Image (cartoon, rainbow, N blue to C red):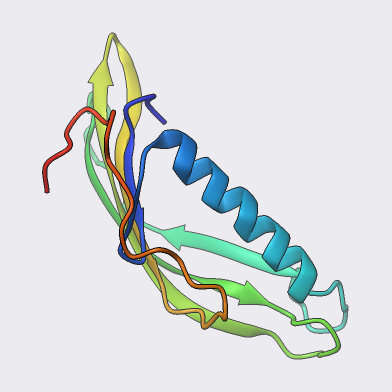
Length: 129
């Protein structure tokens, strides 16, 4: 991810550092609420996307749209709970290297943890939108 990343998750806004901090917090919440029970064929937590790759091998960037799900086996349970999610990324060639310059993600996984509906893109390359 580029240092000037502009990111959002469920309506909140982040620069690169804020986005990392949010996902570190998510990691703690996931660790506290999802177990390691076996027998379901699932890992304790999964979060992934499926997308179609760019068919042009010379591509240096563009927009990637994806759908997927996140969830797993809650502690004390044996059946996985999963929720769909979606995202898109903007990839740009900057100095001959591909960078993610924008990421927007939305999850439908219910949680008592509420994200701020504001946030800031201050310091991001494109602060508009």
